[in-house]
Image 1 (cartoon, rainbow, N blue to C red):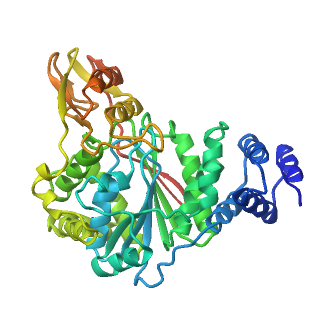
Image 2 (cartoon, rainbow, N blue to C red):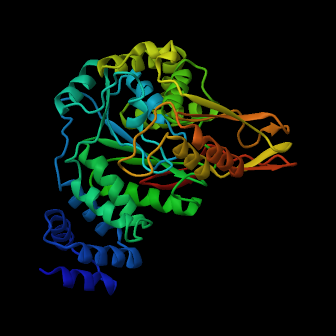
Length: 440
């Protein structure tokens, strides 16, 4: 078998066999397939696409390229959740404790942030003492003892995907639905879950800008899950505005804590309840309506909040942060931003808000960049709200005073103020499962 022939076949629109895909993935991981040939095949895939069987084969080849986490020792149906990434997306911090409080084990491997979308691991590490790099044995023991553990992905989890993504990033082949779907699902499958729930973001702050694109990505990922025997459901959710009001690591943890206390923003709470309902349903806890009641009760009773405290304590963190936010690292510089006009906030360039938070130090400009856990943006006003000229609309936080001016300029540029109030879109836009697409 030769890479030349595989490249030529896909270039001409041919259908790759499983053996050819595995030959490529294994060869590239081992170094037998050079970058220039791998890049040529990725571009051929970008231009010609992959069908559902090819996409599933690529997913499994990458999932099998490293270790596969076994959760067999944990009782019950394990349901994993993945978000395609957004600004202010701290759902895992609320959702995980809610689901665990309802008796469903949550064993979650999460990632770090890169670019304008934040990572769950960076958020958790803003809690003093919280450890995310833990051995697999401690990870599974944490799930057995407290019902929940959240840790960083191991280096050997789908390593072929990691290497191929780095190549895609520099060869203009990132924006391909089969390649995105196989990348996400290879890591989910390798993580050992029995069922998978996907939160596919769409809008100005998401990778998918249109509902049509988001539906196609969701269908591709659901198709992969079903083909490999893992029941998968995707919710398509809006990201034309940040989720909640907080953007930045400790700010988002505080907002998650407030949500678990019953004081969170409406959009964040609503999304977490809906995602929890789907996870509980897939775990066999009953029909969707009953599962929604369980999710709501976990918040109202304080059980979900207590589960977060157990998670923090079990992974070495200071659970006192839940009652004293002063225990978080505090920013050296704070600046309020004021509205330059009067009217309604008609729209937000959410990706620009995310980039402003990165400028302040809340995210990474490169993989090696250091994170400032206290940096970020707290929004006082969002899309649809009335503002008056000179009214405070946001707070900026950073340890680097010289970055405040650029971040303020980006934030102001991100907002469109109009005399007319906009028609607000719902948080939930569609649901995709094996039966098809349901617009909500």
